[in-house]
Image 1: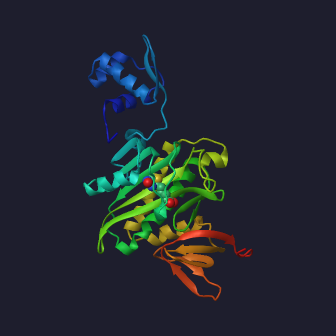
Image 2: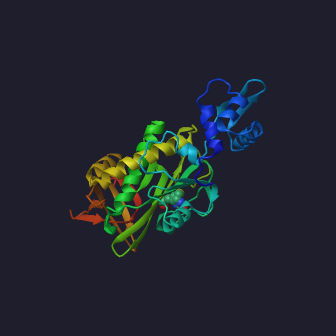
Image 3: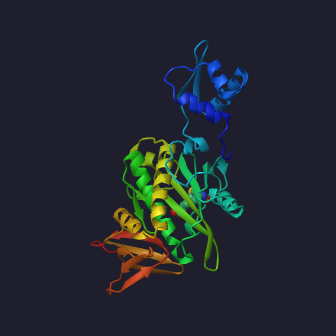
Length: 329
Ligand code: BTN
């Protein structure tokens, strides 16, 4: 389902603004279609999950809207300059990363978003798979960060993680933390992750596809993972969360674009759950340990080792986190 500003959308716009019934005759006239055509569209909206009642002699009234990432729903009241100007939604995909990459190669615009309800071949970092059952938010964002050099692209995943945490907080009031480089942690377990795939040549970045997976109302997850539902016992509206996340991501991105990435890092740092903790990081084929003390201006993790030496880690996977006073077992 691609970008659509179709009749369904116009019908919804008309129904939404109304507390009372809107007569079929009036609506059909306004949209310059027959009453029969209107009825057909109302029917198709019902199939999409919109609860619309039709009462003879009164007309139509909308009772509820589905928690689905239809492009017109994602874009509704979305206060962004360029992110999600183009939105694609699919009930199921292998991976939003693949669709987004194809869009990137065929020249889709900066900020294009691909969302899905389910992924059958979701990908995680380090070649892992990403279990993507119903109930989660899975999207890929196509970015064309012309202002960034290839070595500066780690900035992107940090600002995306920050956008996720802030967006979730705004939509739900819940406190989610970040674990370097870009895991989202809720009540000590992994709630979501970010996968950044870059299309570049030597030092020129053509585009970046950033994939975001967040467990919202999901139940069947691996033991090391959680969802907002599992952590709170409550269900949440994914659409509201996704919109807030997209807005928060754009705010961070615009700061980075204006060369104010330090402001993003400062904020990211406030949400990081590693400070003062001893961590073990796997970097390709070696593992290092130390106390996580800070992050530098490029987004590298600073680890204080036992001999006092500060090691800067550009990329890796945190395999263990222990409060400093306990030390490793
Ligand atoms: C991680 O390993 O922590 C990163 C997980 C990223 C998952 C998201 S879900 C949407 C997008 N499509 C994918 O196949 N992966 C990313």
